[in-house]
Amino acid sequence: MLLKVFAMNESILARIKTLPPLPETVSKIQQICADPESSIGDLVKIVEKDPMITANLLKAANSPFYGFSREITTVSQAISLFGMATVKGLALSGAVKEILGMDLQAYGITPNAFADISGLQNALMQTWYVKIDRSKMDILSVASFLQESGKIVISQALVKEGKAKEFKHEVEAKQKTLSDIEKEFVGETTASVTAAVFEHWRFEEHLIDAIRYSDDPMSAPEDVAAYAKALAVAKIALSPLDTFSEEHTKEAVSKAFTFGLDQAIFEESLMTLKSRAGF
Image 1 (cartoon, rainbow, N blue to C red):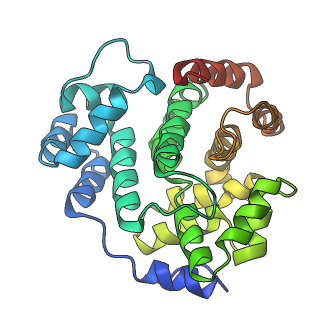
Image 2: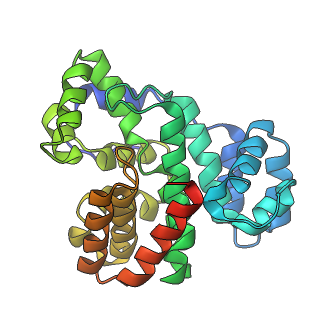
């Protein structure tokens, strides 16, 4: 499959082209979730055969981010509570991080902090956007787990090119937006690189475009605009840098208003998540 990305940074493009296929279990999970005839029981059987996915699923289900009222001890319980799309996103997220590695030194982000951001962005969708339009959660549940993945590839390219320290200095200076710094150093953004990675793995087109256009949702095609707007708000509110900061919260609320989303619902949902996460 040819990538739809033109004039992409050669180091990044070369890295993407060498990525191996996703694990068989993850591919089976994708197939089950794409089949309208499949059931939660079908998904349970596949997940239970993979100890790593099972462990990650139960860890997520028992994290404070989602606010479940009781301990979740079985795969069946977790899938019933989360739904198939969230389980798909969780499985894909784990596989992507395993394949790409977790070297984020250019951003100054630890692997654990990065994993938390993926979970928080998904939990925000589950807390917030499900009240806006539940029908869009099939895409948003997955995309919210995955949309920051491009940072791993960008960080690796910067390390390879000897630019990681300079990049990190620019990020810490906070004189420019993170996307602008990424463009300056590699000619790409997290969103464009993430989209290219998922084109390589032949993810569904709406998922890829939702992430790609999250940099500029107002330019998105009509059929993905709502997804792109939600992802844009989530990644502003829950940036891997300065998570839950007052500055990012204000900016996210402003974006929600610009995009025609209910500010009150968003602010309430974000505050609920902030409380759960102990911030």
